[in-house]
Image (cartoon, rainbow, N blue to C red; front, side):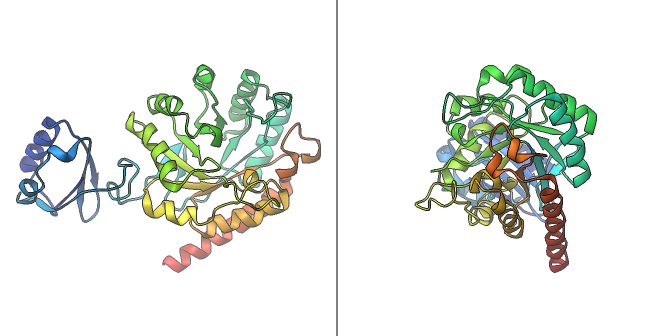
Length: 337
């Protein structure tokens, strides 16, 4: 349920209303905008009398929200959420560039790459430490050492870092990681999502290959329901009948999710396509569609990468892509102005 208040509501009446609502066992989320203040009611709102609230002097309107996701719903929070991680803002059309190797291979590799990525225009460094692979015989990542090397690269370059957390048992080593990535395989790992609700770090939540928009938002709701509102939705491709690419990047997901939710939305063109020549065009299409950023796999020598080489772009390709992203971003700003 959403309660829309009139402009400049009486503070005493507002406190009285919120106290009464909370006494009914309902959580109240307040959003203050330039023109309106909105109270989002989360919980069993069947005990709330809409007519009684509507009759109050400070209330403009009351609306029931049919969607099962509440905290992630734009009806509860009309303004875009902007998340700050390591000094970098994500959301509100930020066009953040998150880049790094599919796998951290050594301290020298990730530290060297971090410095070069920063110079090429990256805002956030990411790298695979725990690699969830389809085959148990494939390279599984450096695990704890991989996180350790990422933290060293962070200190050397000044870039915030993001890394994928595959299991709650790994969380102890992520204290110095700025953003937690939840891979597509774990989008429905609800115990892990609940845990991240109290872990106190921003989360990039990747859409599972067969998940609907609502299912992705409900997974975000698991995190948010435990108190963590810093969730970044990531479109990383869905499984279709087309075999030419690894998955199909659903560009439609970007504007739809932006309409349904106030959370930032980014795209992962690397793992969606599985082919490095497609990374740049899909990244540019995502930014043009309204994405708040992209996550790209970048390596100095992709042909010698320990994993994910075919979907990884070179530094020169990343630098060129960043320039084109900034050009699109500038054009969009001119149109809005």
